Image 1 (cartoon, one colour):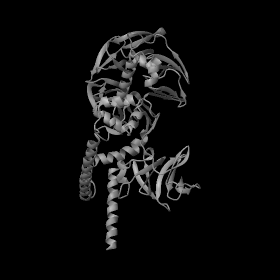
Image 2 (cartoon, helix red, strand yellow):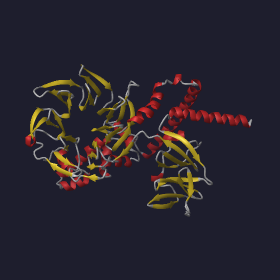
Image 3 (cartoon, rainbow, N blue to C red):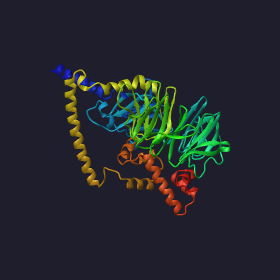
Image 4 (cartoon, rainbow, N blue to C red):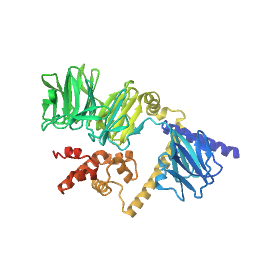
Length: 542
């Protein structure tokens, strides 16, 4: 009888982990359960490694070995901030929400948890036990809490241009300008930096502002390029040829312009209205019209790829018919890697269009990416967002991540082995999860009704919170709601906007009201976290 029970338990566990391998084909893998002489209290990161506190000792991770620390602690929990400190309870800042991966925690009950990570090793302490997982990251993020506007990389020079500063070689912050609004361009050994005005950049840290580089009719500078030995500039209100002394000769005016590129023998530029035009040096022709604003033009060989609010479109020089490649709303930029994968950054996530699958594949969800902030450098893909700089290795994506992901997308569940067993188990599991979620939702609704709280946000309430708590960044806004930027972006998506756009709108509205109340511009800039130059530009105060 005991043998039969043990076999049932064995096959139940086997089915459990087999189902997990289907549901979680990549990213997080269960590795090990670590054993200690006494129950585990908590786990934390410190000194570039991981520490585990048990009821009797504090242990430091050394490779695969836990080494006891020769210090006495009288309280149950230990954490680290500049030094070790004890606590009778786990602070909220140290708690880990195990709900999103609770299926990966082999415990019957659900307990409070702490977590720590070193490299790809991830540890969760919960229910007096310590579990280890391997996280297979497919991207990293740097320049946290900065809105990335452009990435420029060449030998011995790396420039990250953000809305809150320009950084050279990850070590130097330019004193001026205080922000960027366009891509850095190298033309005939000179570096042109558009940031509403146009400056010359002399690495590593010198800037010369070009006088008269903008005027009342041109609008704000966005891009400088070279074509047939002469320089041209994209402005918000014009596309112009640059004459000696940076005198501007407009080749087109009257629309709002978003991008400018060279394609074959012509210049191509796009507009807010969705009209794409060409100029051959003598006349303007209409190339295409897309039913949404076209934010980016990507010329590749004999193809032109347009990123627009209505998705991604392609125009082939051999076939002038416009075709839609991807229905990805609010697309901002595209690039093509060495494996012929088309990367699409949008205001709601990063996608890749692979020849092995008909639809765009979501790689990074619920992140607001910026236009003019997508760079492929060798195998590395750099993508700028409102909350930092994302980096991916396209070789690893192509050879490891995508095959695993495509396997789960392409193989129908009905064609997998043991279909009846898995299908039945999933059906029961689905029913149980549905019932649990129903009970949980009902309970939450009762609690919310009792507390008078709301499940949905309104823009007015969000604006009031931003102003009352003096929130200046997307990450600070997420922290205010005790969530992360990904979930924050999901919630804002339901409201028809993004966190970055709404935060900027609220801050500029606040700046305008403060100026109308007679506040000094320097005081306004300090209050909202924007430079005086940016405030003047956005509110047209010049």
